[in-house]
Length: 104
Image (cartoon, rainbow, N blue to C red):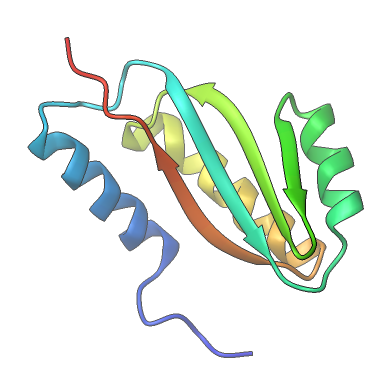
C-alpha cells in the first residue's frame, strides 16, 4: 500500500483555505459529501454510515456518504478521522470530501 504524498489532514486544511478565500469560515452547517472507492466492502460501509446518520449512495466500486455539517477544523477533525478509520476497516480508499461554499 502506498502512502499519499499529502495527508488527509493537509487536504482538509487546503479545502478549508479555499473556502476561506470565499469568505466562508466553515462553521455554518452545509451539505457535505465523502467519497470512497475500491474493491472493499461497500455494503458494510453503507450499513455503518447509515447507522451514524449519513445518507449513502453510489454504484460499482464507489460509495458517497452525505450529511449536513460544519466543516471548520474543530468540527471536522473527528469526522475526517472516522472516514479514514472506515476506509481502513472496509478495505476502501477514502478519496476526500467536498461541500458547498456558505457565506452570509
